[in-house]
Structure formats: C-alpha cells, structure tokens
Length: 253
Image (tube, rainbow, N blue to C red; front, side, top):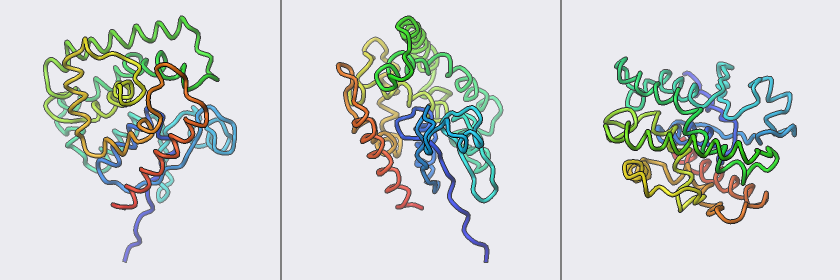
C-alpha cells in the first residue's frame, strides 16, 4: 500500500500578489498544500533574503513551490501555476488546445510590465516603506497600469467574457490579484468607474470559488487609501489570511 504523498509547500505570505494567485489556484482546485510564511526582503530566519531560502530560490522572490516527495523546487508565480496545471491536467484553467493555451500565455507574458505595475505604483509605497520607491517611479507605474487597464477594458474583455476566452483561466487568476486588490472593499486605491468591462469581470471573479478565502488578508487590512497601515496591521492581516487558508486546506486535505 503506497503512502500518501506529502502536501506541497508554498513559501510566501497571503498579502503578496503573486503568492495569492498560486494560493487561490490551489484552493480552487482543492489541492492540499502547506503555507510556509516567508517575509519578502528580510534576511531573518523566515526571510526571502536568508541564505537558506536563497538556496531554494536564488532570486529571493516569493512565491516558491516545493514538492517534498520529489525535492522539486520552482519559483515565479506564473511558472508555478503553469507547472501545476500541466502536472495535474487542469485543462479547465490551462486549455490543452494550443491556440487557446497560447492566449493564456499571451496574458501571462504581458502581465509583469503592465498590470503588475499596480503594486509598484499604488500598493508597495504604502506597504513596503523600506523600498523607498521614488515618486517619479510611482507615477510612471500608475500611468503604465492605467494604460494596461484600458487595454483590458477595450480589448480582451470587450471581446470575451474572460481574459483569454470564454472560460476562466490562469490569466484571470494572475490579473485579478493585481487589479482586484485595489477595489473599495479592499485597499480602495483605484477608481474603476471608467472601465465597464473590467468592472463586469471583477464582479465575475468575486464569484469564483474560494475568492473570499484567498483574499481574507485584504479584507482584514481594509482601506489604506488615506493612511498607510502600520506594520502591526499588515502582520495581523497576514496572520488572518494564513489562518483562513489553513482552515480551508484542513477541510479538504
């Protein structure tokens, strides 16, 4: 009788946008996993710049996925999500048809220097004071994000119900963690009124299974549009997010 495989390890914290994308996908697919808290930018024992962590992920980024049974380690959220879909045959979110899959990949490649700029221009300056992001860099990032949001509204989401076609895909998970975090019920950092198709899509994404669980940390933190949150508030939000994720995983693990 074969032993049950050890659960996947996901290194990171719930407030991290890329971590949240992988976390949500795993919750959505009811895949057992264990969260290993890793603080971005820290050299502490549980930090992403600690030598032990850098031995796993030389780039010092989060998330990192680890398979205890095989020893396989992988960094970068989009690579992780594609690997998981390939490994487990999740063709509902990563289609097997080459052209449909290519549309998902198209968005995933587009993401980093476009929609990802939401975190650089709007969120990180309030959450990661240690980064000391220059004002000019923030404004440039906001401009890039706004142009990308308009491209989604008048292009991708004007042509189909979801980002890569007529079904939910990895592209939607990746995009929502950046865009969705800015909504009034979360950080309240952007006005989506000029983007009707994006607003429609945001509403759809809120109905995707395990949305609330994956975003519990954001709900706990709340509106940061006027005042930057304290380190204690950020820590408590991550603790809340971790608790919710662990509870849900225990229910189906």
